[in-house]
Amino acid sequence: MESKKNTFQRLLEVMDELREKCPWDKEQTNETLRTLTIEETYELAESLLEQDDEAISKELGDLLLHIIFYAKIGEEKGAFHIGTVMEKLIEKLIYRHPHIFGDVKVQNAKEVEENWEQLKLKEKDGNKSVLAGVPNSLPAMIKANRIQDKVRGVGFDWEDRSQVWDKLKEEFNELQVEIEKDNQDGIEDEFGDLFFSLINTARLYGVNPENALERTNQKFINRFNYLEKKTIQKGLSLKDMTLTEMDEIWEEAKIMLKRQKD
Image 1 (cartoon, rainbow, N blue to C red):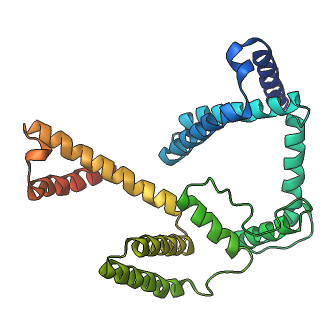
Image 2 (cartoon, rainbow, N blue to C red; image 1 turned 180 degrees about the horizontal axis):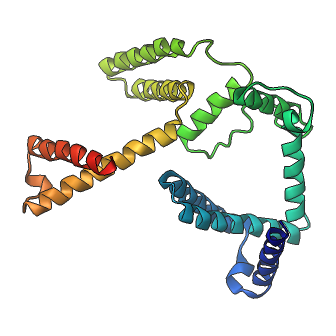
Image 3 (tube, helix red, strand yellow; image 1 turned 120 degrees about the vertical axis):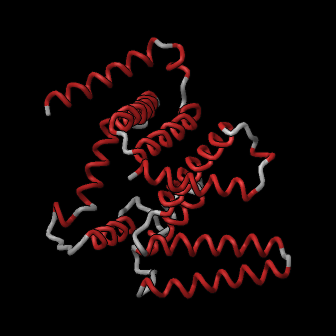
């Protein structure tokens, strides 16, 4: 434990020195770092999906650098410092885990999540609305999943997850009606409702929709790369091939890539 404390202290000292002496580091602000932080977050997310421990360790370091950087800027402004950040985090963790640090009893992880959301609403400086804590800047799919998870925490959810299938069919039928009308605005609106219901369905069945879609993205990329490679090997061009010819190689790709995975 002592070595961890010493290492963290050394990191803070390095940041102090960089902020004082490095021309680039001296110029950075919350605004200039923001987009870089988003990029680092996505790089960490990619490493997590790939389950690459070495890359995860590296990307965690990059993200930690940004946290330390923001804390340093806050300290210079006299607003807060890294100690303040950690103290508030410790207080939050203890307060929102009364089943660990108090006498509250829970049966499972779901009850822990429900308590978490209820406690957030009770906090003096917490969000007044259940959905107020959902950042507007989140990507739409992640935001939809977060919204649904938030309202579930206060009991706004299906009594039985099987009920969601009727809603999904309803949204699909409403989309078909708008398509038949050739109403572009209505089509977009109903596609949104259908996507929202699909995300809700995934959540109810314990599937993270973002992860599920990314798995399909990677599967498609791998198969299409195989298709391109095989086409080049045959001295052909995708533009000159028929859809039937491409589909034959596509089916071959599905078989070969599955064998490699197995």
